[in-house]
Amino acid sequence: LVLLLGEIDLSIAAVGTFAAVVMGVLINYHGFSAWEAILLGILAGALAGAINGFFIAVLRIPSFIVTLAASIFYAGLLLNLLNGQATLIIQDPFILGIAGSSTSFLPDYLGVGLPTLILVLYAASLIVDHIARQRAGLRAKPLLQLIVQIGLAVVIVEGTVAVLENTPSATPGIYLGVPNSAAILFALILILWLVLTKTTFGRHLYAVGGNMEAARRAGINVVFIRITAFTLCSTLASVGGILAASYANSVATQINPSLLLDAIAAAVIGGTSLFGGTGSVWNIVLGALIIGSLENGLDLKSQGSDVKQMVEGVVLLFAVTVDALVRRAQRRSGR
Image 1 (cartoon, rainbow, N blue to C red):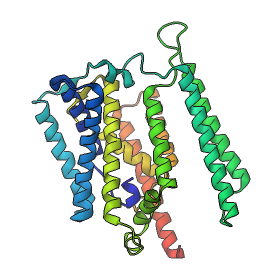
Image 2: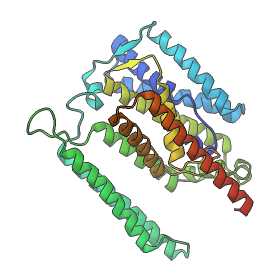
Image 3: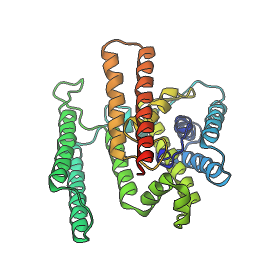
């Protein structure tokens, strides 16, 4: 979201860890229920993002400085919250059931039914949009391209579901199915896609990222858009931190820097411009898959983290260089 504005958020890994620690502390030491702790953890992360957005949008301090300072601040705050502990163990069964236990999977009827329903709604939205554009005399995608787009979505989603539903567990005759975390991730991706493509906020976000001054003159509340983008970014990071805590059954105060680098790399490799105004949710998902495939492939080759980081660095630099060259060519051609 913030990359679409031409900004950057270096605090997402720290904020995600902070939200997970808030959740764990509330459950372990203050007797809060799992739902209350999750909600307050996410709200704490959202507040952190709103504070970042205030300094950036209102006080006009560069996002690099603000979010770097926030990352350092939360690293210290984590140690303070845990009184110097390195790890906070999560034992709540509901939290562990999200992504960290043998029950962290959707029932079969939901694992198969929900993706199918979402695909139907996705196809319907594309078809309705196509018809509306034609009736309004606007440029619409060729029918063949529309069919291919829907077909690819069906193959990818249903193929993934089929693989997951037929993955055997440690117990003979029992299959794992679709993980809860995967369902949550897909739901968030779908919501974000709808927000960015079907709402006024999404259109304004792209407009501000493309040309902030032009957007301001067009009557768009630029300050609100920028603060909201940073707030949503930290909210999503908080959800990710809580999912990671559930999966690991614990929260470590040591912030993993590779999470931040992987997130930025996935967005840039997926075609999101660091200069703002350009990017797609589904392309970012593709970028994340590329990063994951690279890491898994290097793991299969028994390569160490040193090689993985060097390869990711080269790929990221290549993607940014291509983006910069394309931008330069567009400026020269007057587009």
